[in-house]
Length: 433
Image (tube, rainbow, N blue to C red; front, top):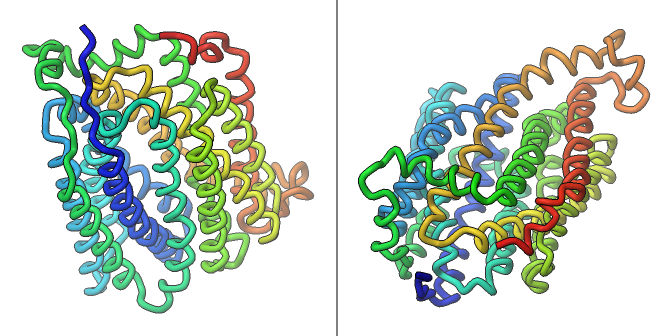
């Protein structure tokens, strides 16, 4: 029997969304500042990518049970706890830096702690959206989430790139703490709906291990969702390999120009906001899968041009165009998942999706550093194995190998989108029930 859902007001969603936007602003500033600090401290891509890897690793461990936790526990409490732990982690980093004790391995530990609770917080938030608003607003809400993320990227990197040399890592951390506090207050002020307890506990109430596998069995039973999941995993795997070398590539090819790096991130933010505003105003196509696949193709093409470029003009333009595509892709894909998965099991199903994405992302970050430091960078040095073939395109200076790796990953992203149009199961997902 179909459950009658009682949706919260769109106003409550807006309040939470504003809190997430402000929080994302502070987080982006801190992450940007930490990336600069690690690169200046070590001058190694592997070290920088390992920070991302150790952040993902514990999150992967908690993800299989996070869906059960989110479906059974109070989602509002989980969101508050997740943000509160993030505040504690930021304070710890600031104190270590202030006392001249901060080391890279500290970021591995703090990143691991933050990763666990961020997984619970983000999953609780994602699973709550479907209960807070009616289905007709799913695409709009998803595009607003992208607007929050990319909106933060407009100002945060530019501010952080400038403030890093003015107030330092400690000052930026204080701003991050204030933004997290704002996010916590925004959640406390409104009602976060829970799925009907009767339906939550009716799914295998006595066998927790059965529940852990429920999300995967649900996806396997819906072949179109499985096809969408596999396509997304491939796309984001290649994206994350390229993303892992993005910051050191730009710093290496620009002489550690942090202001340029901030400007590029702001261009990405502006592009993302434009894409999100278009999706929010439009509401999305009836054939959402076309938006997903065209977003992949557009992002892959733009990133290929970005990697081939070596001037600020090309980088800024390509970065803007690339980011326009991600709200098109992501909001449409999220809308498909929200529409195809019943609300009372979204926590477990979304947890499986998140787990697989994180595993592929962790692998991407784990291999990207060694590939850059030990394979592509040496191969693109003068007299390197690949310099004779690609030297005229990428040059033979520091960062050329990373640029080659970035372009190869971008082309693979483009090909994943093109291939998706030829998979009937995926192409017809909007018509399947």
